[in-house]
Length: 255
Length: 266
Image (cartoon, rainbow over all chains, first blue to last red; front, side, top):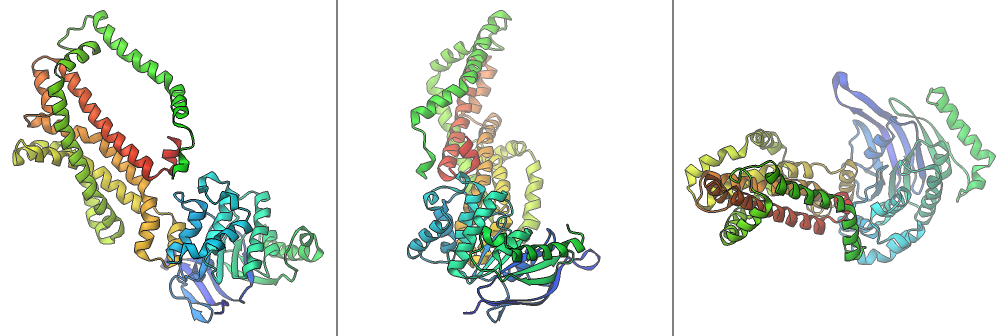
């Protein structure tokens, strides 16, 4: 099954009449299967709104989202979702939380046991599988949350600022873990972020979003080899991309 | 779940004593002050009795006190359990039904303002001196905190977890069992604890008004006979019932939600 995601004139307005807030769009965008696309923009520009509409958890006011040739009507189950505040529950261990995703879908935890081990190893969390979330640092919690969001091998990943609450150093490390996971499984990813550097490090494409109402100002193809480490980040091509995005935001008075 | 109990039992007890010695000193000091202030200030015995005399006279009347403790304890426990049995499903129904939330919920909030104990004389007149009116009063006292906290509990699931469960396509029942119910338990226990603290109030008041046995009856009779020593003994056993009920709820809480911050910090 293809996991190409298409947005056809997608627009969202909250409320009605005089109180209506035009939050987002209209937007046209096509994300090919296996691509890692970042929605890069300042807070309040409707990035999360677009993500929720993609997952079918929020209905667009106008237009249509199409995944794998099928229009999105209602919640999509072949997706993995992650938010800034993770969905780890305090009454389960790290492993139990990952298994929650499987149990909710009626999948056998025994069958996935090996996969859970592999994923925990990929994010350096093997030793913490029996710990509860509150025993872990914020960074470790987000690593566990990545595993929870990906354990059922979704074709599409929707990541809404998953690193937003972490300190700069932890972000750096988890970014590379995230990249490893993505390169292993190659799902189609929509990654919401307001970090310019993060967007260009991780993505094959960056959609630069301007605020109120959120609109895609430019789509920048990032043609740099994976995995992208510090070497790539200090390359002139990388700096040029970063500067391009910065100039757009500066012209809109965002930075 | 055993991983929560990392400290050996005796070490935990030692830490507990180390942290609470000031309280123990204060507690003992309070009773010593009570004991001797009666001599110092020359307070008549029919007004206040020293703790030593309460223990002595209470022990002499222990048989009656224990039986009445059983009577009142049974009323309290029965009313409390029935309140849980009715209040939890009702709270759940209100939390998940928009119609009930607009009709029954505001009605319950209004009724909550009425002091339930004020109904006690009516229930006694309707239902007589037996067990039933007492259980109903205890039930009324316990019912509202449990139902209101249950509604709050089942409506407080975080936005993220709500979206997460919808994205899994897990269905209402699975979402309830695996996410909503465990997430709601801590707030439910707030209601249980509040109810447990107030349950004995209901039982005692109901017995004051119309009864021929139980601790409330006992306290009223001995006070009429100018025996504050025995009244205090009755109050002691009434307190004991409340403590036991609260203890049971606390133990259940520790077993059911050992992961919750209130238990971990406890």
